[in-house]
Length: 104
Image (cartoon, rainbow, N blue to C red; front, side, top):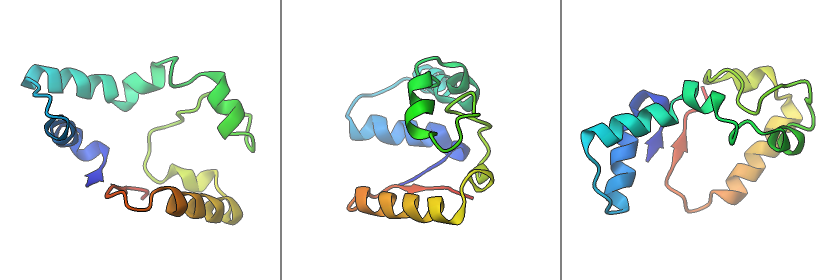
């Protein structure tokens, strides 16, 4: 399954079907709005300082855990070593999961 902001409504419907929890079109629209970058970037539960302190220890000048919402912006923050470490972590922790993320 490929997940991305380009087809969030389709991903929501696919998850809804998988969970066998039918949703009305209005519920899909509402959930997509809630999951939008704009909404998530304003959500305190997503942008709590603990996330920044734990996950962004190499760049504590960041004010939010969620930055710009631009695919590929990670290149402005990751050096070659950090990219290699994340690739290794992702490979080790996503084995057997059929989800592809869009990085660029």
